[in-house]
Amino acid sequence: MRDALTNSMRASHVLALVLLAAGLMFAAFGAVTNDTFYLRLATEALIFGGLALAVDILLGYTGLLSLGQAMFFGLGAYVAAVVLIAIPSFWLAFGAALVAGILTGLIGGFIANRVRGVYFALITFGMAQVVAKVIYNTRSLGASDGLIGVPIVKINFGLFAVSSDNPVGFFLFTMAYVGALYLIAAYILDTPFGRLLIALKANERRVPFLGYHATSARLAAYVLAATIASLSGALYPMLRGFASPELLFFATSGNAVITVITGGAGTLIGAIYGSVLLTVIKSYVGSWTEHHLIVIGILFMLVVIFLPNGLMGVVRPWVEKLLARKTRS
Amino acid sequence: MIEVLDYLQFVLAPQVVTGLTLGVAVILVALGLTIIFGLLDVINMSHGEFYALGAFMALALSWIGVPFWLLLVLVPLAMLPIGYLVERSLIQRVFNSKDRHVTTLLLTFGFGLVLEEIIKLLFGPNPYKPETPIRGAIEVFGIFIPNYRLFLIVAGGAVIVAVALIVYRTRWGAIVRAAAFDRHMAASLGVPVHRVYAIAFAFGVALAGLAGVLLAPIYSVFPTMGRDFILLAFTVVIVGGMGSIAGAVVAGLFLTQVQAIASLYISPVWSDPIVFGIMVIMLMVRPQGLYGRLGHA
Image 1 (cartoon, rainbow over the protein chains, first blue to last red):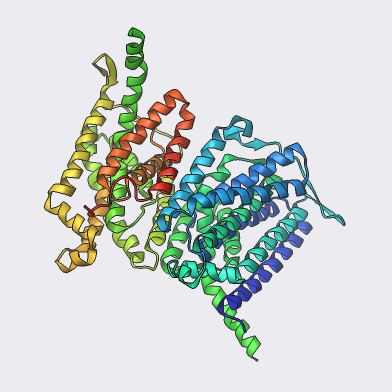
Image 2: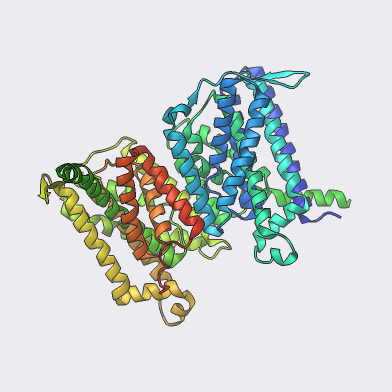
Protein backbone atom coordinates (compact mmCIF):
# COMPACT_ATOMS: atom_id res chain seq x y z
CA MET A 1 0.00 0.00 0.00
CA ARG A 2 1.54 3.27 -1.08
CA ASP A 3 0.20 6.66 -0.12
CA ALA A 4 0.35 9.93 -2.01
CA LEU A 5 3.68 10.96 -0.51
CA THR A 6 5.47 7.76 -1.51
CA ASN A 7 3.98 8.00 -5.00
CA SER A 8 5.14 11.57 -5.41
CA MET A 9 8.60 10.63 -4.12
CA ARG A 10 8.76 7.83 -6.68
CA ALA A 11 7.91 10.34 -9.39
CA SER A 12 10.68 12.60 -8.07
CA HIS A 13 13.11 9.67 -8.24
CA VAL A 14 12.20 9.06 -11.87
CA LEU A 15 12.87 12.72 -12.62
CA ALA A 16 16.15 12.43 -10.71
CA LEU A 17 17.15 9.49 -12.92
CA VAL A 18 16.36 11.59 -16.01
CA LEU A 19 18.62 14.33 -14.68
CA LEU A 20 21.32 11.78 -13.84
CA ALA A 21 21.23 10.43 -17.39
CA ALA A 22 21.44 13.95 -18.78
CA GLY A 23 24.35 14.67 -16.42
CA LEU A 24 26.23 11.56 -17.55
CA MET A 25 25.72 12.50 -21.20
CA PHE A 26 26.91 16.01 -20.43
CA ALA A 27 30.01 14.64 -18.66
CA ALA A 28 30.79 12.36 -21.61
CA PHE A 29 30.35 15.27 -24.00
CA GLY A 30 32.57 17.45 -21.82
CA ALA A 31 35.24 14.74 -21.66
CA VAL A 32 35.25 14.33 -25.45
CA THR A 33 35.42 18.07 -26.20
CA ASN A 34 37.95 18.60 -23.42
CA ASP A 35 35.79 21.32 -21.89
CA THR A 36 36.50 22.95 -18.54
CA PHE A 37 34.26 26.02 -18.39
CA TYR A 38 30.87 24.38 -18.81
CA LEU A 39 31.74 21.41 -16.60
CA ARG A 40 32.79 23.80 -13.83
CA LEU A 41 29.59 25.78 -14.33
CA ALA A 42 27.48 22.63 -14.13
CA THR A 43 29.33 21.54 -11.00
CA GLU A 44 28.55 24.88 -9.43
CA ALA A 45 24.89 24.55 -10.44
CA LEU A 46 24.74 21.20 -8.62
CA ILE A 47 26.41 22.64 -5.52
CA PHE A 48 23.90 25.48 -5.35
CA GLY A 49 21.22 22.89 -6.07
CA GLY A 50 22.23 21.29 -2.77
CA LEU A 51 21.59 24.59 -1.00
CA ALA A 52 18.19 24.85 -2.70
CA LEU A 53 17.45 21.29 -1.57
CA ALA A 54 17.92 22.48 2.02
CA VAL A 55 15.55 25.40 1.43
CA ASP A 56 12.97 23.00 -0.02
CA ILE A 57 13.05 20.74 3.05
CA LEU A 58 12.00 23.77 5.09
CA LEU A 59 9.72 25.56 2.62
CA GLY A 60 8.20 22.71 0.66
CA TYR A 61 7.81 20.14 3.43
CA THR A 62 7.78 21.95 6.76
CA GLY A 63 6.21 25.19 5.56
CA LEU A 64 9.00 27.43 6.86
CA LEU A 65 10.47 30.08 4.61
CA SER A 66 14.17 30.47 5.36
CA LEU A 67 15.69 33.69 4.06
CA GLY A 68 19.08 32.88 5.55
CA GLN A 69 19.97 29.37 4.45
CA ALA A 70 23.13 30.70 2.85
CA MET A 71 24.49 31.14 6.37
CA PHE A 72 24.91 27.36 6.70
CA PHE A 73 26.12 27.03 3.13
CA GLY A 74 28.77 29.68 3.73
CA LEU A 75 29.75 28.24 7.09
CA GLY A 76 30.24 24.84 5.46
CA ALA A 77 32.38 26.45 2.79
CA TYR A 78 34.52 28.32 5.34
CA VAL A 79 34.91 25.28 7.61
CA ALA A 80 35.96 23.14 4.67
CA ALA A 81 38.34 25.84 3.42
CA VAL A 82 39.99 26.22 6.83
CA VAL A 83 40.43 22.46 7.19
CA LEU A 84 41.69 22.02 3.63
CA ILE A 85 44.26 24.80 4.00
CA ALA A 86 45.57 23.15 7.19
CA ILE A 87 45.31 19.50 6.07
CA PRO A 88 44.24 18.82 2.49
CA SER A 89 42.03 15.85 3.28
CA PHE A 90 38.55 15.65 1.77
CA TRP A 91 37.15 13.34 4.43
CA LEU A 92 38.39 15.56 7.24
CA ALA A 93 36.78 18.61 5.59
CA PHE A 94 33.60 16.62 5.01
CA GLY A 95 33.47 15.53 8.66
CA ALA A 96 34.13 19.07 9.88
CA ALA A 97 31.36 20.49 7.66
CA LEU A 98 28.99 17.76 8.86
CA VAL A 99 29.67 18.54 12.53
CA ALA A 100 29.52 22.29 11.87
CA GLY A 101 26.19 21.88 10.07
CA ILE A 102 24.63 19.91 12.89
CA LEU A 103 25.93 22.20 15.64
CA THR A 104 25.09 25.51 13.97
CA GLY A 105 21.77 24.01 12.89
CA LEU A 106 20.95 23.22 16.52
CA ILE A 107 21.89 26.73 17.66
CA GLY A 108 20.14 28.44 14.75
CA GLY A 109 17.11 26.22 15.11
CA PHE A 110 16.88 26.97 18.80
CA ILE A 111 16.81 30.70 18.00
CA ALA A 112 14.63 30.62 14.89
CA ASN A 113 12.04 28.13 16.09
CA ARG A 114 10.90 30.42 18.85
CA VAL A 115 8.82 32.26 16.27
CA ARG A 116 6.42 31.30 13.49
CA GLY A 117 5.38 32.32 10.05
CA VAL A 118 6.68 35.57 8.71
CA TYR A 119 8.76 36.16 11.83
CA PHE A 120 10.62 32.92 11.14
CA ALA A 121 11.58 34.25 7.70
CA LEU A 122 12.78 37.50 9.24
CA ILE A 123 14.76 35.89 12.06
CA THR A 124 16.61 33.54 9.69
CA PHE A 125 17.35 36.57 7.57
CA GLY A 126 18.63 38.51 10.60
CA MET A 127 20.83 35.66 11.86
CA ALA A 128 22.43 35.24 8.45
CA GLN A 129 23.10 38.98 8.32
CA VAL A 130 24.84 38.92 11.71
CA VAL A 131 27.03 35.92 10.85
CA ALA A 132 27.82 37.25 7.37
CA LYS A 133 28.89 40.63 8.74
CA VAL A 134 31.00 39.00 11.47
CA ILE A 135 32.85 36.88 8.90
CA TYR A 136 33.13 39.88 6.61
CA ASN A 137 34.91 41.74 9.40
CA THR A 138 37.14 38.95 10.69
CA ARG A 139 40.63 39.49 9.41
CA SER A 140 41.86 35.97 10.17
CA LEU A 141 39.16 34.62 7.82
CA GLY A 142 40.31 36.91 5.04
CA ALA A 143 37.68 39.61 5.79
CA SER A 144 36.06 40.95 2.63
CA ASP A 145 38.48 39.09 0.34
CA GLY A 146 37.49 35.70 1.70
CA LEU A 147 39.74 32.72 2.27
CA ILE A 148 41.91 32.18 -0.77
CA GLY A 149 44.44 29.54 -1.65
CA VAL A 150 42.48 26.39 -0.91
CA PRO A 151 44.67 23.58 -2.29
CA ILE A 152 43.56 20.97 -4.82
CA VAL A 153 42.25 17.91 -2.99
CA LYS A 154 42.42 14.26 -3.87
CA ILE A 155 39.19 12.62 -2.80
CA ASN A 156 40.26 9.11 -1.85
CA PHE A 157 37.72 6.30 -2.09
CA GLY A 158 40.19 3.50 -1.38
CA LEU A 159 39.85 1.83 -4.78
CA PHE A 160 40.17 5.05 -6.76
CA ALA A 161 40.66 8.75 -6.17
CA VAL A 162 39.11 11.85 -7.74
CA SER A 163 41.07 15.08 -7.93
CA SER A 164 39.19 18.34 -7.60
CA ASP A 165 41.15 19.86 -10.51
CA ASN A 166 39.82 17.26 -12.92
CA PRO A 167 36.67 18.87 -14.40
CA VAL A 168 34.97 15.64 -15.49
CA GLY A 169 35.91 13.67 -12.39
CA PHE A 170 34.86 16.41 -9.99
CA PHE A 171 31.60 16.97 -11.88
CA LEU A 172 30.75 13.28 -11.62
CA PHE A 173 31.75 13.26 -7.97
CA THR A 174 29.57 16.33 -7.25
CA MET A 175 26.66 14.69 -9.05
CA ALA A 176 27.02 11.60 -6.87
CA TYR A 177 27.45 13.73 -3.75
CA VAL A 178 24.41 15.95 -4.35
CA GLY A 179 22.50 12.88 -5.49
CA ALA A 180 23.31 11.25 -2.15
CA LEU A 181 22.11 14.35 -0.30
CA TYR A 182 18.89 14.19 -2.33
CA LEU A 183 18.40 10.51 -1.53
CA ILE A 184 19.01 11.04 2.18
CA ALA A 185 16.54 13.93 2.26
CA ALA A 186 13.99 11.93 0.23
CA TYR A 187 14.40 8.89 2.47
CA ILE A 188 13.99 10.89 5.68
CA LEU A 189 10.96 12.76 4.33
CA ASP A 190 9.29 9.49 3.32
CA THR A 191 9.41 8.16 6.89
CA PRO A 192 6.71 8.85 9.52
CA PHE A 193 8.90 11.78 10.57
CA GLY A 194 8.54 13.29 7.11
CA ARG A 195 4.77 12.90 7.32
CA LEU A 196 4.87 14.68 10.64
CA LEU A 197 6.63 17.61 8.95
CA ILE A 198 3.95 17.73 6.27
CA ALA A 199 1.35 17.72 9.02
CA LEU A 200 3.15 20.70 10.56
CA LYS A 201 2.94 22.50 7.26
CA ALA A 202 -0.77 21.76 6.95
CA ASN A 203 -1.79 22.69 10.48
CA GLU A 204 0.70 23.17 13.24
CA ARG A 205 -1.84 23.56 16.03
CA ARG A 206 -3.40 20.18 15.50
CA VAL A 207 -0.14 18.24 15.57
CA PRO A 208 0.26 18.29 19.38
CA PHE A 209 -3.27 16.91 19.73
CA LEU A 210 -2.13 13.80 17.91
CA GLY A 211 0.55 13.31 20.55
CA TYR A 212 3.51 14.68 18.64
CA HIS A 213 5.95 17.27 19.81
CA ALA A 214 5.78 19.98 17.17
CA THR A 215 8.80 21.96 18.36
CA SER A 216 11.26 19.09 18.29
CA ALA A 217 10.04 17.95 14.87
CA ARG A 218 10.56 21.43 13.52
CA LEU A 219 13.99 21.64 15.11
CA ALA A 220 14.95 18.31 13.54
CA ALA A 221 13.84 19.56 10.12
CA TYR A 222 15.88 22.71 10.65
CA VAL A 223 19.00 20.76 11.62
CA LEU A 224 18.58 18.47 8.61
CA ALA A 225 18.30 21.48 6.30
CA ALA A 226 21.28 23.18 7.94
CA THR A 227 23.42 20.06 7.58
CA ILE A 228 22.54 19.61 3.92
CA ALA A 229 23.31 23.27 3.23
CA SER A 230 26.62 23.01 5.09
CA LEU A 231 27.63 19.82 3.27
CA SER A 232 26.80 21.44 -0.08
CA GLY A 233 28.82 24.49 0.83
CA ALA A 234 31.81 22.31 1.72
CA LEU A 235 32.26 21.48 -1.98
CA TYR A 236 32.46 25.12 -3.03
CA PRO A 237 36.07 25.84 -1.97
CA MET A 238 37.16 22.58 -3.61
CA LEU A 239 35.63 23.75 -6.89
CA ARG A 240 36.70 27.39 -6.86
CA GLY A 241 39.71 27.35 -4.55
CA PHE A 242 38.29 30.00 -2.22
CA ALA A 243 35.44 30.84 0.16
CA SER A 244 34.11 34.38 0.12
CA PRO A 245 31.71 36.22 2.44
CA GLU A 246 29.30 36.65 -0.50
CA LEU A 247 28.40 32.99 0.00
CA LEU A 248 26.61 33.97 3.22
CA PHE A 249 24.93 37.11 1.93
CA PHE A 250 21.23 37.54 1.35
CA ALA A 251 21.76 37.40 -2.41
CA THR A 252 22.79 33.74 -2.05
CA SER A 253 19.87 32.89 0.24
CA GLY A 254 17.48 34.74 -2.05
CA ASN A 255 18.86 32.91 -5.06
CA ALA A 256 18.23 29.59 -3.36
CA VAL A 257 14.62 30.60 -2.69
CA ILE A 258 14.18 31.66 -6.33
CA THR A 259 15.64 28.31 -7.38
CA VAL A 260 13.24 26.31 -5.23
CA ILE A 261 10.14 28.28 -6.21
CA THR A 262 11.00 28.13 -9.90
CA GLY A 263 11.91 24.44 -9.79
CA GLY A 264 8.92 23.55 -7.65
CA ALA A 265 8.72 23.69 -3.87
CA GLY A 266 7.89 20.42 -2.13
CA THR A 267 9.34 18.17 -4.81
CA LEU A 268 13.03 18.01 -3.71
CA ILE A 269 14.23 17.26 -7.23
CA GLY A 270 12.73 20.58 -8.31
CA ALA A 271 15.52 22.29 -6.37
CA ILE A 272 18.18 20.63 -8.52
CA TYR A 273 16.24 21.19 -11.76
CA GLY A 274 15.68 24.80 -10.76
CA SER A 275 19.39 25.32 -10.13
CA VAL A 276 20.32 23.81 -13.48
CA LEU A 277 17.64 25.84 -15.27
CA LEU A 278 18.67 29.12 -13.66
CA THR A 279 22.33 28.46 -14.42
CA VAL A 280 21.48 27.77 -18.06
CA ILE A 281 19.42 30.97 -18.28
CA LYS A 282 22.14 32.94 -16.54
CA SER A 283 24.91 31.78 -18.85
CA TYR A 284 22.74 31.94 -21.98
CA VAL A 285 21.20 35.36 -21.36
CA GLY A 286 24.43 36.49 -19.76
CA SER A 287 26.25 35.89 -23.04
CA TRP A 288 24.44 38.81 -24.67
CA THR A 289 23.55 41.06 -21.76
CA GLU A 290 24.87 41.50 -18.25
CA HIS A 291 21.35 42.27 -17.08
CA HIS A 292 20.21 38.66 -16.92
CA LEU A 293 18.59 39.33 -13.54
CA ILE A 294 15.73 41.10 -15.34
CA VAL A 295 14.91 37.86 -17.15
CA ILE A 296 15.28 35.76 -14.01
CA GLY A 297 13.29 38.22 -11.92
CA ILE A 298 10.42 38.32 -14.41
CA LEU A 299 10.44 34.54 -14.77
CA PHE A 300 10.37 34.22 -11.00
CA MET A 301 7.44 36.65 -10.69
CA LEU A 302 5.52 34.80 -13.39
CA VAL A 303 6.09 31.50 -11.59
CA VAL A 304 4.93 32.97 -8.28
CA ILE A 305 1.74 34.31 -9.89
CA PHE A 306 0.83 31.59 -12.37
CA LEU A 307 2.67 28.42 -11.31
CA PRO A 308 2.68 28.39 -7.51
CA ASN A 309 3.97 24.81 -7.59
CA GLY A 310 6.81 25.62 -9.94
CA LEU A 311 8.13 23.71 -12.89
CA MET A 312 8.03 20.32 -11.19
CA GLY A 313 4.52 21.08 -9.98
CA VAL A 314 3.55 20.75 -13.63
CA VAL A 315 5.84 17.89 -14.65
CA ARG A 316 5.70 15.66 -11.59
CA PRO A 317 1.93 14.95 -11.45
CA TRP A 318 2.24 13.90 -15.08
CA VAL A 319 5.05 11.46 -14.21
CA GLU A 320 2.99 10.23 -11.26
CA LYS A 321 0.07 9.44 -13.57
CA LEU A 322 2.41 7.63 -15.91
CA LEU A 323 3.78 5.55 -13.03
CA ALA A 324 0.30 4.77 -11.71
CA ARG A 325 -0.81 3.52 -15.13
CA LYS A 326 2.26 1.30 -15.32
CA THR A 327 1.67 -0.31 -11.94
CA ARG A 328 -2.00 -0.93 -12.69
CA SER A 329 -1.41 -2.68 -15.99
CA MET B 1 36.07 69.13 33.09
CA ILE B 2 36.96 71.07 29.95
CA GLU B 3 38.24 67.90 28.37
CA VAL B 4 34.91 66.25 28.95
CA LEU B 5 33.06 69.18 27.37
CA ASP B 6 35.44 69.21 24.44
CA TYR B 7 34.87 65.54 23.97
CA LEU B 8 31.12 66.01 24.01
CA GLN B 9 31.32 68.92 21.62
CA PHE B 10 33.78 67.62 19.05
CA VAL B 11 33.42 63.85 19.19
CA LEU B 12 30.13 62.71 20.59
CA ALA B 13 27.76 65.45 19.42
CA PRO B 14 28.68 65.33 15.71
CA GLN B 15 28.22 61.57 15.82
CA VAL B 16 24.80 61.97 17.42
CA VAL B 17 23.81 64.48 14.71
CA THR B 18 25.01 62.11 11.98
CA GLY B 19 22.99 59.35 13.59
CA LEU B 20 19.96 61.60 13.77
CA THR B 21 20.19 62.42 10.05
CA LEU B 22 20.28 58.77 9.19
CA GLY B 23 17.57 58.09 11.74
CA VAL B 24 15.09 60.52 10.20
CA ALA B 25 15.69 59.08 6.73
CA VAL B 26 15.37 55.51 7.95
CA ILE B 27 12.13 56.35 9.72
CA LEU B 28 10.69 57.69 6.45
CA VAL B 29 11.46 54.40 4.73
CA ALA B 30 10.37 52.33 7.73
CA LEU B 31 7.05 54.21 7.94
CA GLY B 32 6.16 53.10 4.42
CA LEU B 33 7.13 49.51 5.22
CA THR B 34 5.21 49.43 8.45
CA ILE B 35 2.04 51.01 7.03
CA ILE B 36 2.06 48.51 4.16
CA PHE B 37 2.54 45.62 6.59
CA GLY B 38 0.03 46.90 9.11
CA LEU B 39 -2.67 47.38 6.53
CA LEU B 40 -2.05 44.83 3.80
CA ASP B 41 -0.14 42.19 5.74
CA VAL B 42 2.50 42.39 3.03
CA ILE B 43 6.26 42.49 3.58
CA ASN B 44 7.42 44.69 0.76
CA MET B 45 10.83 43.34 -0.18
CA SER B 46 11.08 45.82 -3.06
CA HIS B 47 10.88 48.82 -0.75
CA GLY B 48 14.64 49.42 -0.92
CA GLU B 49 14.47 49.52 -4.70
CA PHE B 50 11.69 52.10 -4.53
CA TYR B 51 13.98 54.16 -2.34
CA ALA B 52 16.71 53.84 -4.97
CA LEU B 53 14.18 54.68 -7.70
CA GLY B 54 13.31 57.90 -5.86
CA ALA B 55 16.96 58.89 -5.66
CA PHE B 56 17.52 58.17 -9.36
CA MET B 57 14.38 60.06 -10.38
CA ALA B 58 15.69 63.04 -8.44
CA LEU B 59 19.07 62.65 -10.14
CA ALA B 60 17.58 62.48 -13.64
CA LEU B 61 15.23 65.41 -13.02
CA SER B 62 18.05 67.52 -11.60
CA TRP B 63 20.01 66.88 -14.82
CA ILE B 64 17.29 68.58 -16.83
CA GLY B 65 17.39 71.50 -14.44
CA VAL B 66 14.56 70.88 -12.00
CA PRO B 67 15.42 72.64 -8.72
CA PHE B 68 15.84 70.59 -5.57
CA TRP B 69 12.79 72.11 -3.85
CA LEU B 70 10.54 70.97 -6.62
CA LEU B 71 12.04 67.47 -6.54
CA LEU B 72 10.89 67.07 -2.95
CA VAL B 73 7.33 67.34 -4.25
CA LEU B 74 7.62 65.93 -7.76
CA VAL B 75 9.36 62.64 -6.96
CA PRO B 76 6.92 61.44 -4.29
CA LEU B 77 4.04 62.47 -6.58
CA ALA B 78 5.56 60.47 -9.42
CA MET B 79 5.99 57.47 -7.13
CA LEU B 80 2.29 57.42 -6.24
CA PRO B 81 0.97 56.06 -9.57
CA ILE B 82 3.86 53.57 -9.74
CA GLY B 83 3.03 52.22 -6.30
CA TYR B 84 -0.68 52.15 -7.10
CA LEU B 85 -0.07 50.16 -10.28
CA VAL B 86 2.28 47.71 -8.58
CA GLU B 87 -0.25 47.02 -5.85
CA ARG B 88 -3.14 46.64 -8.27
CA SER B 89 -1.40 44.62 -10.98
CA LEU B 90 0.98 42.48 -8.93
CA ILE B 91 0.15 42.20 -5.26
CA GLN B 92 -3.61 41.88 -5.72
CA ARG B 93 -3.01 38.91 -8.02
CA VAL B 94 -1.70 36.78 -5.18
CA PHE B 95 -3.31 38.64 -2.31
CA ASN B 96 -5.86 35.90 -1.66
CA SER B 97 -3.52 32.95 -2.08
CA LYS B 98 -3.14 30.40 0.69
CA ASP B 99 -0.02 31.80 2.26
CA ARG B 100 -0.19 35.52 1.69
CA HIS B 101 2.90 36.44 3.70
CA VAL B 102 5.21 34.16 1.80
CA THR B 103 3.73 34.69 -1.64
CA THR B 104 3.67 38.47 -1.49
CA LEU B 105 7.16 38.49 0.04
CA LEU B 106 8.45 36.40 -2.86
CA LEU B 107 6.63 38.47 -5.46
CA THR B 108 7.91 41.79 -4.18
CA PHE B 109 11.38 40.26 -3.85
CA GLY B 110 11.25 39.35 -7.55
CA PHE B 111 9.94 42.78 -8.44
CA GLY B 112 12.78 44.39 -6.50
CA LEU B 113 15.33 42.37 -8.45
CA VAL B 114 13.83 43.50 -11.75
CA LEU B 115 13.55 47.13 -10.65
CA GLU B 116 17.16 47.23 -9.46
CA GLU B 117 18.36 45.71 -12.70
CA ILE B 118 16.31 48.18 -14.77
CA ILE B 119 17.90 51.05 -12.87
CA LYS B 120 21.30 49.49 -13.54
CA LEU B 121 20.42 49.19 -17.21
CA LEU B 122 19.42 52.86 -17.45
CA PHE B 123 22.09 54.48 -15.28
CA GLY B 124 24.95 51.99 -15.16
CA PRO B 125 26.36 50.43 -12.01
CA ASN B 126 28.59 53.34 -10.96
CA PRO B 127 27.73 55.75 -8.14
CA TYR B 128 26.75 59.38 -8.76
CA LYS B 129 27.39 62.13 -6.30
CA PRO B 130 24.74 64.86 -6.56
CA GLU B 131 25.57 68.36 -5.40
CA THR B 132 24.47 69.44 -1.98
CA PRO B 133 21.51 71.80 -2.49
CA ILE B 134 22.25 73.78 0.68
CA ARG B 135 25.84 74.60 1.35
CA GLY B 136 27.60 75.80 4.46
CA ALA B 137 27.28 74.89 8.10
CA ILE B 138 25.74 76.42 11.14
CA GLU B 139 26.97 76.51 14.72
CA VAL B 140 24.49 75.35 17.34
CA PHE B 141 25.76 75.34 20.93
CA GLY B 142 29.29 75.19 19.62
CA ILE B 143 28.56 72.18 17.43
CA PHE B 144 29.04 72.56 13.71
CA ILE B 145 26.18 71.07 11.74
CA PRO B 146 26.15 71.13 7.95
CA ASN B 147 23.12 73.12 6.88
CA TYR B 148 21.82 70.36 4.66
CA ARG B 149 21.80 67.83 7.49
CA LEU B 150 19.93 70.27 9.67
CA PHE B 151 17.42 70.79 6.86
CA LEU B 152 17.05 67.03 6.46
CA ILE B 153 16.35 66.53 10.15
CA VAL B 154 13.78 69.36 10.24
CA ALA B 155 12.06 68.52 6.95
CA GLY B 156 12.09 64.78 7.59
CA GLY B 157 10.81 65.33 11.11
CA ALA B 158 7.98 67.46 9.71
CA VAL B 159 7.02 64.74 7.24
CA ILE B 160 7.03 62.13 10.01
CA VAL B 161 4.76 64.30 12.15
CA ALA B 162 2.51 64.93 9.15
CA VAL B 163 2.21 61.18 8.47
CA ALA B 164 1.35 60.51 12.10
CA LEU B 165 -1.27 63.28 12.02
CA ILE B 166 -2.77 61.95 8.79
CA VAL B 167 -3.02 58.43 10.18
CA TYR B 168 -4.28 59.36 13.64
CA ARG B 169 -6.17 62.63 13.17
CA THR B 170 -7.87 62.62 9.78
CA ARG B 171 -10.85 60.86 8.28
CA TRP B 172 -8.49 59.22 5.79
CA GLY B 173 -6.37 57.88 8.61
CA ALA B 174 -9.43 56.57 10.38
CA ILE B 175 -10.41 54.65 7.24
CA VAL B 176 -6.92 53.16 7.00
CA ARG B 177 -6.91 52.17 10.67
CA ALA B 178 -10.37 50.67 10.38
CA ALA B 179 -9.35 48.62 7.35
CA ALA B 180 -6.23 47.45 9.19
CA PHE B 181 -8.22 46.43 12.25
CA ASP B 182 -10.94 44.45 10.47
CA ARG B 183 -11.04 44.54 6.71
CA HIS B 184 -14.36 42.74 6.41
CA MET B 185 -16.14 44.98 8.84
CA ALA B 186 -14.65 48.07 7.20
CA ALA B 187 -15.75 46.80 3.81
CA SER B 188 -19.27 46.16 4.99
CA LEU B 189 -19.42 49.71 6.34
CA GLY B 190 -18.72 51.00 2.88
CA VAL B 191 -14.95 51.46 2.95
CA PRO B 192 -13.53 50.71 -0.52
CA VAL B 193 -10.92 48.42 1.05
CA HIS B 194 -9.12 47.50 -2.16
CA ARG B 195 -8.66 51.09 -3.18
CA VAL B 196 -7.48 51.93 0.33
CA TYR B 197 -4.90 49.14 0.03
CA ALA B 198 -3.56 50.43 -3.26
CA ILE B 199 -3.44 54.03 -2.06
CA ALA B 200 -1.72 53.07 1.19
CA PHE B 201 0.84 51.04 -0.76
CA ALA B 202 1.42 53.98 -3.10
CA PHE B 203 1.74 56.27 -0.09
CA GLY B 204 4.37 54.03 1.52
CA VAL B 205 6.31 53.82 -1.72
CA ALA B 206 6.16 57.62 -2.08
CA LEU B 207 7.68 57.98 1.39
CA ALA B 208 10.53 55.69 0.32
CA GLY B 209 11.01 57.84 -2.77
CA LEU B 210 11.08 60.99 -0.64
CA ALA B 211 13.77 59.43 1.56
CA GLY B 212 15.72 58.72 -1.62
CA VAL B 213 15.54 62.38 -2.67
CA LEU B 214 16.55 63.60 0.78
CA LEU B 215 19.47 61.23 1.25
CA ALA B 216 20.90 61.43 -2.28
CA PRO B 217 23.03 64.54 -1.55
CA ILE B 218 24.53 62.89 1.57
CA TYR B 219 25.21 59.39 0.30
CA SER B 220 26.01 58.57 -3.28
CA VAL B 221 23.32 57.36 -5.67
CA PHE B 222 23.88 53.86 -7.06
CA PRO B 223 21.56 51.03 -8.14
CA THR B 224 22.16 48.82 -5.09
CA MET B 225 21.87 51.72 -2.63
CA GLY B 226 18.56 50.31 -1.41
CA ARG B 227 20.00 47.01 -0.24
CA ASP B 228 21.97 47.97 2.85
CA PHE B 229 19.57 50.72 3.71
CA ILE B 230 16.52 48.50 3.59
CA LEU B 231 18.12 46.02 5.98
CA LEU B 232 18.31 48.80 8.53
CA ALA B 233 14.73 49.85 7.79
CA PHE B 234 13.55 46.26 8.25
CA THR B 235 15.35 46.09 11.56
CA VAL B 236 13.65 49.31 12.64
CA VAL B 237 10.24 47.97 11.65
CA ILE B 238 10.79 44.66 13.45
CA VAL B 239 12.13 46.19 16.64
CA GLY B 240 9.46 48.88 16.69
CA GLY B 241 6.69 46.42 15.92
CA MET B 242 5.51 45.46 12.43
CA GLY B 243 2.71 47.82 11.57
CA SER B 244 3.33 50.38 14.30
CA ILE B 245 4.00 54.01 13.45
CA ALA B 246 5.17 55.02 16.92
CA GLY B 247 7.38 51.94 16.99
CA ALA B 248 9.07 52.88 13.73
CA VAL B 249 9.90 56.34 15.08
CA VAL B 250 11.19 55.14 18.45
CA ALA B 251 13.16 52.20 17.05
CA GLY B 252 14.46 54.29 14.18
CA LEU B 253 15.92 56.91 16.50
CA PHE B 254 17.19 54.31 18.95
CA LEU B 255 18.89 52.00 16.46
CA THR B 256 20.58 54.74 14.47
CA GLN B 257 21.94 56.17 17.71
CA VAL B 258 23.18 52.71 18.70
CA GLN B 259 24.86 52.50 15.34
CA ALA B 260 26.41 55.95 15.63
CA ILE B 261 27.68 55.44 19.19
CA ALA B 262 28.86 51.89 18.51
CA SER B 263 30.93 53.03 15.56
CA LEU B 264 32.54 55.54 17.87
CA TYR B 265 33.39 53.20 20.72
CA ILE B 266 33.75 49.82 19.08
CA SER B 267 34.33 50.17 15.38
CA PRO B 268 32.21 51.29 12.42
CA VAL B 269 32.40 47.82 10.89
CA TRP B 270 30.85 46.24 13.96
CA SER B 271 27.81 48.53 14.07
CA ASP B 272 25.92 46.38 11.55
CA PRO B 273 26.27 43.06 13.43
CA ILE B 274 25.22 44.84 16.64
CA VAL B 275 22.09 46.31 15.08
CA PHE B 276 21.10 43.03 13.41
CA GLY B 277 21.85 41.23 16.66
CA ILE B 278 19.35 43.51 18.41
CA MET B 279 16.82 42.55 15.74
CA VAL B 280 17.37 38.83 16.27
CA ILE B 281 17.12 39.15 20.04
CA MET B 282 13.96 41.24 19.68
CA LEU B 283 12.42 38.59 17.43
CA MET B 284 13.30 35.92 19.97
CA VAL B 285 11.87 37.57 23.06
CA ARG B 286 9.14 39.80 21.65
CA PRO B 287 8.40 39.06 18.00
CA GLN B 288 5.55 41.56 17.87
CA GLY B 289 8.02 44.37 18.62
CA LEU B 290 7.89 47.29 21.01
CA TYR B 291 4.49 48.61 19.99
CA GLY B 292 1.22 47.15 18.79
CA ARG B 293 0.02 46.96 15.24
CA LEU B 294 -1.66 49.66 13.18
CA GLY B 295 -5.34 49.97 14.08
CA HIS B 296 -4.91 47.84 17.20
CA ALA B 297 -5.19 50.44 19.98
